[in-house]
Length: 474
Image (cartoon, rainbow, N blue to C red; front, side, top):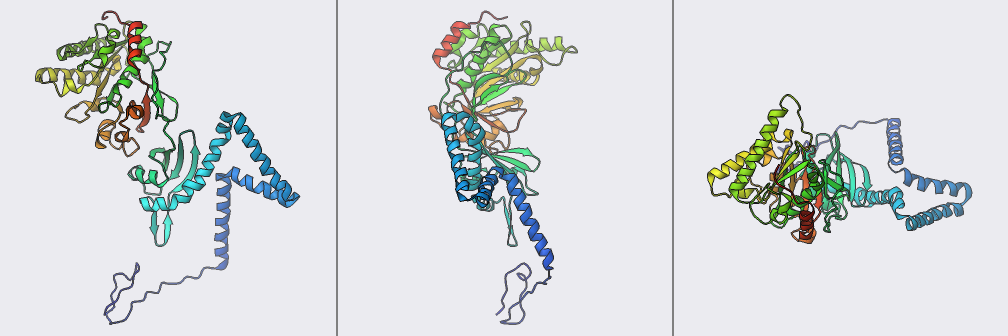
């Protein structure tokens, strides 16, 4: 009977003598005791320094009472932490905001680093495939820092040599569930380092009322709603084109009307013109008085309005050639925003082939040449497939609301967006939870941002139309 022994060296060796085991005896190298002691002492010293630098507050909280206990007795050593705990409690009760900002989040980060991340780090890394177990030794990414704010934990890690961002992005779900979070967002902190964001709660779970109309006539970024971290979100329309994609009932109207609402002061000042194409006759028609003669619903009239926008663009390009390279909104040359609700009605579902090609050509011309001369396009659609919207890549900035399939996320936001945490297919279909919630990916940043647009009600639209009704076309 031939027998094999396991091991790196003997796994392919077979004994030619029956009933005789193959024995591998590795070479033994004697290490001087002094060298072993030096290595051990160096590791202890390096670990101590790393602990002090990583946890200065915790080290101080332990060493100071211990030193006082040795020097002055255990009574003083016990009184110090008790008085400190009482002071922190009083601070938290009487000035919660400053306590949270200066101490609360740091204490929470310290606790979660030890109890959540450090405790589960090795098994999560090994099971998810981000760590390696070779020859009895674990090679793990290094957990550098944990910070907390009002909605999420932000974990900074150092990747193993040879790993890429894609390796981590493909395992975002493993990381999220391994550390008890619903999702995990991955972004690059710097070369070799990643920032992992684990949400603890959802600040966007409640609908936002319509934002007050600004008193400042500005074409710059307009406030749309709220980011996931609680800060206001402002979207730039001038100098870009924006594509909004989402299933029925996902809240595309919230984005369109929030944008229009934010531009109303500039529209009244003559710095902005909003041209509306409403082939469904359901969304933009409710505030038709805001657009005056620059409103079209019939497909042929939509094509005429787009051709008119192309003429404005070409006329400006002829005047700007050799004079200026970028557009500055003025009353003579205002920023023109062409809003198209459900663009697929015009580019894919239009039965008239000639009219369909005419509209597609006009949109392609505007999205390729309009940015520099102050003509932008805001288009909304339900189905992001290429055969439905074959010019979607001409929109630099993209917004993905609730989508039906996970594959559609990358169709809208670009390759790898879902792996980076843009789970638009998981947004709740319940209007009170998910309407208006979207992931935004801008041309200037590859990382998607989760945002909820404010809900502009029918009453708000009526009030806007009554106060800011447009005159005739200029």
